Image (tube, rainbow, N blue to C red; front, side):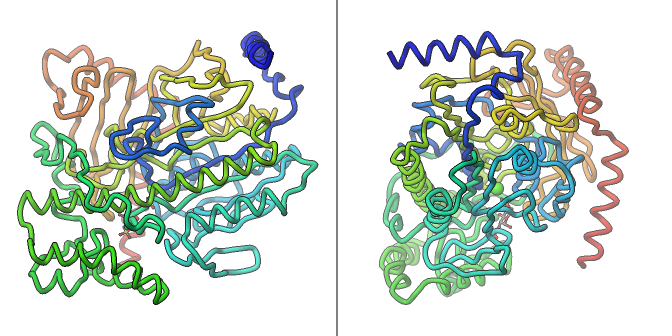
Length: 535
Ligand code: SGN
Ligand code: CA
């Protein structure tokens, strides 16, 4: 009977797909929008279960839709958050890099929902510098926030909480659902984790997990970037050369010094001490019980060369996966709360990350590049009765689509200025007229990790990238033949037609999304001036 009902709703949806009023007449659903920080789809078992099992997050795929080709517009934190809120590309939403301040005067989906009678709340990472606007309730981490006993910014000033950041954010979200929210209004809750951001400090519960586990090594860990522009070799995010033995890999600075290892940046050692100092005495003891033997082994074996890179990779993944385990457990708590309080049926749950992340592919950690691992992001959406369980979507969707989607679900018209498209038709598996290409633009250079400014286009099969500013280089990939992007075929005669077609498509997208070379020049001048001011 229930299945028949779901089927009927599904048919109704399909038949009304072009009619934006569909959701005005339906009861307006609640929305829980979840954004983690730097969660690679390689470490989410609904996508790939070789590294970790994430049964709670996977529930959203089992009970809803998994998007296999979800992408961001600019693979870095603050910009992605601004895109999600506004539905606009970075060059139009005031945040192109982690330094820009979000202009809260512009339209955002939380503001529009509020106006339409929703109650709105945000807990966790914000990272947009200006004070959150458009939220009835908010408690956000200052900047990147801290893993242990984190501080929060609130309307009443800064507060410090006891506990592990992922647990604390979940406690706050559940407290909002349980005790604060107005029960006579639909709600939109943004539940945004700091985890699993660098430097990957796991919760006391997950310290031992993954330790000494042999983690599969990606084929391109020792990539020499033979066919790529120099942008790859010049980026400072290689596990071998730029990852910290101290703050990232958790080797005590005294040992790093004693064994004469060099740290790429001077502040790595202080960052390690700063994090450890946040723990209580009891926690420190617990921590040393797990990391003490790791330090001892390192001291005894003191790996060098390739062995050191492999060792750092294993160490990196042990902590990264441990931090994700905490996210998954807390997702379980939140989803259970919705179940136990009869909220699951009428609540749309969206799970995504601000971007993807390199887990050793091309030798890297971090993100920023338009290559798949950081350009793509996880996206899972559950909406019982509307999205069929175990649905999989393979259309090219992008974070500019989040705001228009959420607005349509709430029965609110998306303003003209939003550049994304609502994903709602895709819920009913109607992809007619869907986009055939994605536009991307990254700006934060010169800056940490030194990934050069670049923009590009990706179609279902090909990707064209232009690196510019202190470089002028193009790359072209055939993703069907070369999904790992190891073989740049730009200027390869066999691809001359594809190359011309991709250049054309890129120019069209730049016009469509209102980006241009003159804007590039404007931002370069702006950023250089800012850098000079900082010096
Ligand atoms: C910190 C990290 C960087 C990271 C940026 C931006 N270093 O500076 O590795 O790229 O944040 O991350 S850390 O050792 O201090 O963690 S983002 O997710 O906010 O864009
Ligand atoms: Ca991030």
